[in-house]
Structures are given as structure tokens and as C-alpha cells.
Amino acid sequence: MDIIKERDVKVFNRGHLSSKKDFLVAEENLQILLNGAELVNISCSPENTTQLAMGYLLSEGYIKKLEDIKHVQVDNPLVIHVETKNKTEFSLDKTKINTCMGRGKSNLPLPLPVGNHSLRFRARHLLKIINELEDTSATFKQTGGVHSAGLADNKELLFRYEDIGRHNAVDKVIGEAFLKQISFHDKCLLLSGRIAAEILLKTAFRGIPVILSRSAPTSRAVNLAEKLGLTVVGFARGERFNLYCNDERIDYD
Image 1 (tube, rainbow, N blue to C red):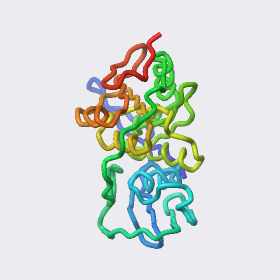
Image 2: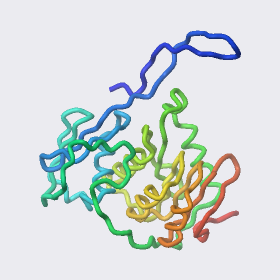
Image 3: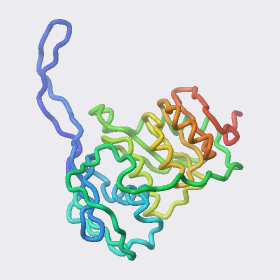
């Protein structure tokens, strides 16, 4: 399924009107069915939707480990059936379309504080991987219409995903690590956009100790990070960044 669509547009520039071909990022709805019933309908970019579904279920507390899943059936990239070993009850709202992947129908408590305070990331490495996240954003370069998220350790950027939604991109990263059984406790989550409280909580629930973004955190996100022990780095661009809390994980040499 194509994630980039081409169309003719008109451009008004300095008093002159002209025509050109432009590129738009595709927007579709992903239907996730849990144990035979529709759980949620998510507005998303139509790629890597299995990772998105797994990340969503994990982030919202419907599954906790890979062994919770009995069967996954993908009819097409936009309809994913998940059957769990223990049936999960949830209230159905057929009118609900989740457009931002925030806290959905679940009612999760606050996560436990994140540990691993002995972990170290070099400042130069953080700048290298955030620049790599930007440099490899092919869909954004063509359309300007997606957010990026990635997962890194203190050696390299492991993988990255894009989506029209910030939360979706993060859940794709979480879903990929979950499916490959990659540990979260010594990793850094990378973002192209704002660090909102909901994304900070997704990070904390997975035990990821460092979150790094090209953009700003919100005050609520930083307050939560202080309480939960996460290191928050924002406005990481070129050769600089801002460090908002828990700087013991950063080496500056």
C-alpha cells in the first residue's frame, strides 16, 4: 500500500500562480480487533501496522508479554485480529476513532520509577543519532507530513519508524522491540517532535531511561520524568541540546 500520494497543486508565490506536482502522505484507518471484537480504529500511515497494533496493545495494557498473544491474523495491512490467551474485557464504543494514539480505553496506573541510573550515553552520541533520525526521514523530506521515532542503544540507532501521528510512531517502535524481544532498560527513545506527557508515560511504562527529541518537552512531561527517573533531552539539533532532568546518564566528554 502506497504511503505517498502524488497530486497536482497550485502554488501562489510573489503574486504569481503556477501549477506543480506535489506529494502527500497517505492517511488510512487501522482497525484492531481484540478477541473478535473491534477495540479501536486508528488514523495512521498505512505501513508497519502490525508493529503499530502490538505497540498500541502493549502501551494500553491489553498485553504485557509476548506469551499473552495466542494468534495474530492480518487480513490486510489495515485490519489486524489479535487473540490473547486470557480474554480481555473492554467496553465497546463503535463511534470512537482514535486519531492521536493517546491513552485509550485502558485505565493504567502510573508506572514504577525507571531504574538503571548507571547507564551512560555520551553527549556526542546523542547528537549523532538524533541527526541520523532526521537524515533518514525519507517520507518527511518528500511530504513534510510525518513524525519520526526510533530506538537506540549507546552504540547505534537500532531502527526507526514514521507515521502521521506522534503516538503512532512511538507505538511502532515499541511494537517492533516487543516482537523482536529487544530489552528496553538500556535504550534511548528518539523523537522528531514534542515530548508530551502521554509519550513520556509510554516511555516510562517500557522502562526506557532516556528520551531524546529535536523538539521541546511539555512542563507536565518534565515533571513526570523527574518523578519517574527518566532523563529528558530536548532541542537536540546540530551540536547542541537542552537537558531537562536526571543528567546523571549523560557523559559530556
